[in-house]
Amino acid sequence: MNDIFTTLGFSSATPVGLQAYLIVGALLFVFGLVAAMARRNAIGILIGIELILNAAILNFMAFWRFAGGEAAGGGAMAGPLFGVFIIILAACEAAIALAILLSLYFNFGTVDVDSIRQMKR
Amino acid sequence: MPVDHATQIAAQNWQGLNLSFWLITILVISSGAVAAFARNIVQAAFSLFFTLLGVAGYYILLGSAFLAVTQVVIYVGGILVLLIFGVLLTNRPLERAQTGMGRMYFVGGLLGLALLLGVLYRVITGTSWVVSKTFIEPGESLRPMGRLLLTDYVLPFELAGVTLLLCLIGAAYLVRRRER
Image 1 (cartoon, rainbow over the protein chains, first blue to last red):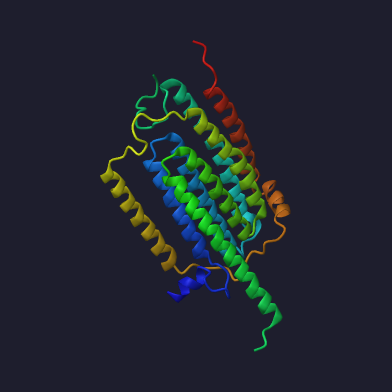
Image 2: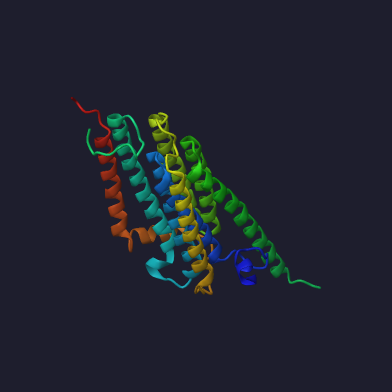
């Protein structure tokens, strides 16, 4: 248990460890999962997906920082590069999702995902 | 007791790093919870702003200022603005209450997710992670990244560009005014 407190950064003799970042990532992931599953507003679902993607990038970065020290070649910068690619794809996803959402709103007059049950009017 | 000067500086540095980690963690977790659970979707969208900024702070702590800047420019400046536009364009009060789930479903879902979080916590703290002896120094990372993007990662890089173009065209096509 003492180990855990050290790796979580409560002692100032050692830096915050890998597990602290992983736990924050897990929390963000669970928050995003709740939002994506329980929200009825489609934009709320989108917010949940953004939270999940951020948790994923955080995990990539944490593993890169703490376990990627010996990586060479393409792996030497794997953390930030994967982060950049995830952010690019998140931008794509947000643009398309909002386009679909606006289209839904024009057609059905609502973005409540429970009341939209067909793909065309 | 005489303390080695370098050790002292190192200790102070860790203290600042740990303190900033915990401040950012408080910001991220509280605003993330609001973003996930707030009834009001506008509140959730604005709360996501602070979550994304906090995660950008983590990227600085983890040694990549470039990714932090990317996060702020694209996520906060682009995606979040897009989300808030979406909220404002479609914000008509829903007919039923916004948390339309039954109480039992809500409690059950929350229990399941608490269980998932517990399992994740046990896995994270129970695993003996193999950590490199040499930490990655937060230093100049832009030059190697640019080099790698045009050598080892050139295919994903080009594909990302094509994907962005396709998304732009697709989004414009989806929201165009249809002639009826």
